[in-house]
Length: 85
Image: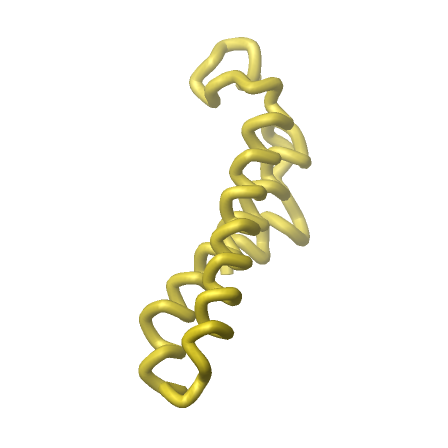
């Protein structure tokens, strides 16, 4: 839910792109965990190839959101005095 909240209405601190990237990563991370922990047990008849493709896609979106957020702050760490107000 936090990921959706960051995607829809990011806080005004830092840049909006940073929070949207983190929101995207949060949503994809939640879906990835759900896929790996719950969905595999609830629907075991899904082909392993399809599960693998879905897991790789969600993990790629998670990493992409984190990379987008990192690049949106100029490649600097969040603790940097230049980024935080």
